[in-house]
Amino acid sequence: MATLSGKLGQVKWSSSGSSGSTVLLDITQWTFTEEAVTTEYGSSATSGWKASVPGVLKGSGSFQFKYSEAASPAFPTAGTNCGLTLVLDSGGSNVNITMAAVIKNLKLTVDIDNGTVVSGTCDFNANGAVAFGAGF
Picture 1: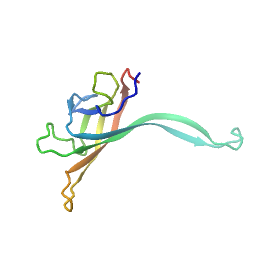
Picture 2 (picture 1 turned 45 degrees about the vertical axis):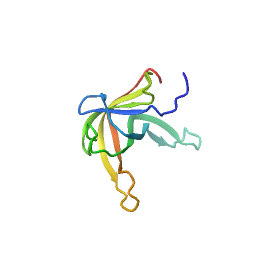
Picture 3 (picture 1 turned 180 degrees about the vertical axis):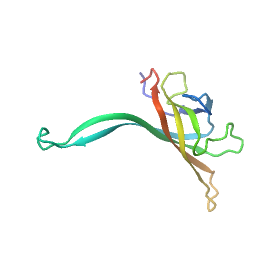
Picture 4 (picture 1 turned 90 degrees about the horizontal axis):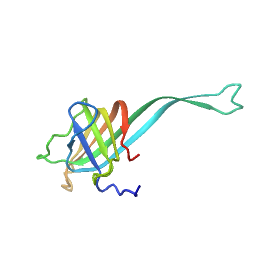
């Protein structure tokens, strides 16, 4: 597989389901973290070292955007249950991550001093299983 630059990345969302279908406009960056909840312990059987036992998996992340009044659809707000698809390369490869998600928060930044473009960030948690496309 070729190395991807990220310049064709996208975030797609839908108001329900376990994947997104509508491309959100003006996304500048997204992140995703897959994590195994672990329990660490030391015992007489671990020779002075901690043992680590993996538990359940969870996913979380965020996406950043430039705000536009003309954006369709509107960006999801805190507490929204939605479907998300995070696309690494929209150039035709199947390198994406899909999930049902809950939007944790929506943060907007308005810079009055410099008049820069209004930007925002949405943080999310996966709501159940996460699917990785065939490109992974």
